[in-house]
Length: 193
Image (cartoon, rainbow, N blue to C red; front, side, top):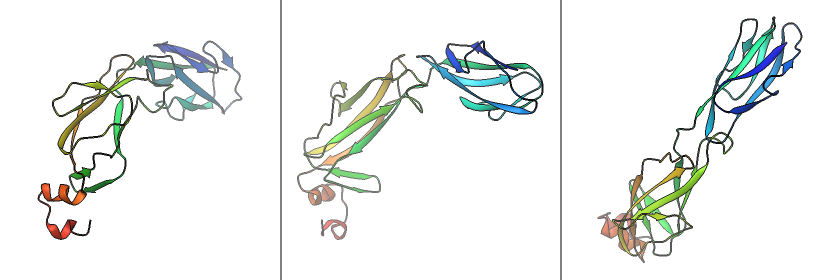
């Protein structure tokens, strides 16, 4: 049979850790590892007499079972920061290295902490700063006054892992053509805007 175990860290397995599943000679058994909050799955190991389809996947298959043995899941502390995305609403105009918005264009931030909330600690907060202003906790879409602005943003997870701050530059103008002219874009490009 195949016995499941946890080698390090905190989490659970399916079938449950400590249980033994009878598998036919040469057969296979699906296994899954679910990390506890603050932990993430790292890898599986298997004793001789069996193989793993993918030792680095949280859900995998024990294959070619030819002897009784143990399959062990390992978990490590979640030390990965979240990743934040910035989305622009409308109206806006973009080009290579140039984004122009209006004072009414919503800017929206979202963050994820790992491939799924079940494998990471989760996002605690998203923060942003406009120009050299104070850092603010993101509560919803925001807009920019007219002018050129530096937006710095990032997220922190529930374990305090902070994403390195990202910085983007936007021009905000009531008339997109005026914004293009402010960035010295040739009139032939924006005259039809």
